[in-house]
Image 1: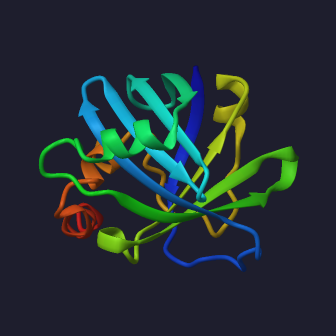
Image 2: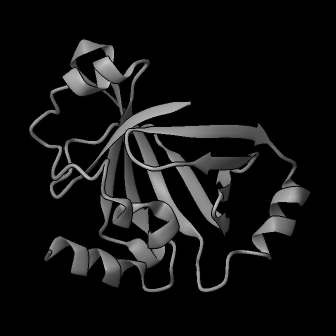
Length: 160
Protein backbone atom coordinates (compact mmCIF):
# COMPACT_ATOMS: atom_id res chain seq x y z
CA UNK A 1 0.00 0.00 0.00
CA UNK A 2 1.25 3.46 -0.91
CA UNK A 3 -0.13 6.67 0.62
CA UNK A 4 1.25 9.63 -1.26
CA UNK A 5 0.48 13.24 -2.17
CA UNK A 6 1.83 14.75 -5.38
CA UNK A 7 2.43 18.33 -6.47
CA UNK A 8 3.75 20.21 -9.47
CA UNK A 9 6.78 22.44 -8.90
CA UNK A 10 7.17 25.61 -10.94
CA UNK A 11 10.18 27.10 -9.15
CA UNK A 12 12.83 24.71 -7.88
CA UNK A 13 14.16 25.08 -4.33
CA UNK A 14 17.88 24.96 -3.63
CA UNK A 15 18.81 21.42 -4.62
CA UNK A 16 21.07 19.17 -2.58
CA UNK A 17 24.15 17.78 -4.31
CA UNK A 18 23.06 14.18 -3.83
CA UNK A 19 20.53 12.75 -6.27
CA UNK A 20 19.63 9.58 -8.12
CA UNK A 21 19.52 9.20 -11.90
CA UNK A 22 16.42 7.27 -12.97
CA UNK A 23 14.94 5.87 -16.13
CA UNK A 24 11.36 4.65 -15.97
CA UNK A 25 9.26 2.92 -18.60
CA UNK A 26 5.80 1.36 -18.79
CA UNK A 27 5.03 -2.18 -19.90
CA UNK A 28 1.28 -2.05 -19.16
CA UNK A 29 -1.19 0.66 -18.20
CA UNK A 30 -3.88 -1.45 -16.51
CA UNK A 31 -2.61 -2.68 -14.22
CA UNK A 32 0.23 -0.17 -14.28
CA UNK A 33 3.43 -2.16 -14.68
CA UNK A 34 6.65 -0.22 -14.87
CA UNK A 35 10.37 -0.83 -14.91
CA UNK A 36 12.92 1.45 -13.35
CA UNK A 37 16.67 1.77 -13.56
CA UNK A 38 18.15 3.64 -10.59
CA UNK A 39 21.77 4.58 -11.11
CA UNK A 40 23.73 1.96 -12.97
CA UNK A 41 23.04 -1.14 -10.91
CA UNK A 42 19.53 -1.20 -9.43
CA UNK A 43 16.61 -2.45 -11.54
CA UNK A 44 13.03 -2.58 -10.23
CA UNK A 45 9.72 -3.93 -11.51
CA UNK A 46 6.63 -2.26 -9.98
CA UNK A 47 2.93 -3.05 -10.25
CA UNK A 48 0.43 -0.41 -9.13
CA UNK A 49 -3.36 -0.41 -8.98
CA UNK A 50 -5.74 2.40 -8.25
CA UNK A 51 -5.40 6.16 -8.35
CA UNK A 52 -5.32 9.07 -5.96
CA UNK A 53 -4.05 9.24 -2.40
CA UNK A 54 -4.01 5.49 -1.64
CA UNK A 55 -2.81 2.92 -4.17
CA UNK A 56 -1.80 -0.72 -4.11
CA UNK A 57 1.88 -1.14 -4.90
CA UNK A 58 4.15 -4.16 -5.29
CA UNK A 59 7.87 -3.93 -6.11
CA UNK A 60 10.67 -6.39 -6.70
CA UNK A 61 14.25 -6.10 -7.86
CA UNK A 62 15.05 -7.60 -11.25
CA UNK A 63 18.29 -8.30 -13.08
CA UNK A 64 19.83 -6.02 -15.70
CA UNK A 65 19.02 -8.64 -18.33
CA UNK A 66 15.34 -8.72 -17.28
CA UNK A 67 15.24 -4.92 -17.32
CA UNK A 68 16.74 -4.72 -20.81
CA UNK A 69 14.35 -7.40 -22.07
CA UNK A 70 11.35 -5.44 -20.75
CA UNK A 71 12.79 -2.09 -21.91
CA UNK A 72 12.59 -3.41 -25.48
CA UNK A 73 8.84 -4.01 -24.93
CA UNK A 74 7.57 -0.66 -23.69
CA UNK A 75 3.87 0.07 -24.00
CA UNK A 76 3.17 1.27 -27.56
CA UNK A 77 3.49 5.03 -28.03
CA UNK A 78 5.45 5.60 -24.81
CA UNK A 79 9.03 6.62 -24.10
CA UNK A 80 11.38 6.13 -21.20
CA UNK A 81 11.04 8.87 -18.58
CA UNK A 82 14.42 10.31 -17.60
CA UNK A 83 14.78 12.18 -14.34
CA UNK A 84 16.86 13.07 -11.34
CA UNK A 85 15.33 12.34 -7.96
CA UNK A 86 16.31 14.51 -5.00
CA UNK A 87 15.40 13.70 -1.39
CA UNK A 88 14.66 16.89 0.56
CA UNK A 89 13.95 16.88 4.30
CA UNK A 90 10.80 18.75 5.33
CA UNK A 91 9.43 19.81 8.69
CA UNK A 92 7.63 17.08 10.59
CA UNK A 93 10.11 14.36 9.61
CA UNK A 94 8.72 14.10 6.08
CA UNK A 95 10.88 13.58 3.01
CA UNK A 96 10.01 15.18 -0.32
CA UNK A 97 11.06 13.29 -3.44
CA UNK A 98 11.60 15.95 -6.09
CA UNK A 99 11.72 14.74 -9.70
CA UNK A 100 13.51 16.99 -12.21
CA UNK A 101 13.00 15.63 -15.72
CA UNK A 102 15.12 15.57 -18.84
CA UNK A 103 14.44 13.87 -22.16
CA UNK A 104 10.94 14.30 -23.55
CA UNK A 105 9.67 15.77 -20.23
CA UNK A 106 12.45 18.36 -19.82
CA UNK A 107 11.10 21.34 -17.89
CA UNK A 108 8.53 19.31 -15.95
CA UNK A 109 9.16 19.18 -12.17
CA UNK A 110 7.16 17.11 -9.76
CA UNK A 111 7.33 16.37 -6.02
CA UNK A 112 5.75 13.65 -3.91
CA UNK A 113 5.61 12.88 -0.21
CA UNK A 114 4.75 9.45 1.21
CA UNK A 115 2.93 8.96 4.51
CA UNK A 116 2.33 6.08 6.93
CA UNK A 117 -1.39 6.89 7.33
CA UNK A 118 -4.18 8.66 5.45
CA UNK A 119 -4.71 10.93 8.46
CA UNK A 120 -1.10 12.10 8.38
CA UNK A 121 -1.33 12.68 4.62
CA UNK A 122 -4.48 14.75 5.00
CA UNK A 123 -2.94 16.84 7.81
CA UNK A 124 0.22 17.62 5.80
CA UNK A 125 0.75 21.30 4.99
CA UNK A 126 3.00 21.60 1.93
CA UNK A 127 5.87 24.09 1.92
CA UNK A 128 5.58 27.23 -0.21
CA UNK A 129 7.72 25.88 -3.06
CA UNK A 130 5.23 23.08 -3.72
CA UNK A 131 2.84 24.08 -6.47
CA UNK A 132 -0.55 22.82 -7.58
CA UNK A 133 -1.59 19.53 -6.00
CA UNK A 134 -2.29 16.76 -8.51
CA UNK A 135 -2.78 13.79 -6.17
CA UNK A 136 -6.33 13.17 -7.39
CA UNK A 137 -5.73 14.26 -10.99
CA UNK A 138 -5.04 11.06 -12.94
CA UNK A 139 -4.12 13.13 -16.00
CA UNK A 140 -0.73 13.78 -14.36
CA UNK A 141 0.09 10.10 -13.85
CA UNK A 142 3.46 9.02 -15.17
CA UNK A 143 1.77 6.38 -17.29
CA UNK A 144 0.06 9.14 -19.25
CA UNK A 145 3.10 11.44 -19.29
CA UNK A 146 5.28 8.62 -20.63
CA UNK A 147 3.54 9.10 -23.97
CA UNK A 148 5.70 10.48 -26.74
CA UNK A 149 3.80 13.79 -26.55
CA UNK A 150 4.04 13.92 -22.72
CA UNK A 151 5.33 17.48 -22.48
CA UNK A 152 2.61 18.74 -24.82
CA UNK A 153 0.08 17.04 -22.51
CA UNK A 154 1.64 18.83 -19.52
CA UNK A 155 1.34 22.21 -21.27
CA UNK A 156 -2.35 21.60 -22.10
CA UNK A 157 -3.14 20.41 -18.57
CA UNK A 158 -1.47 23.42 -17.00
CA UNK A 159 -3.69 25.69 -19.06
CA UNK A 160 -6.89 23.95 -17.84
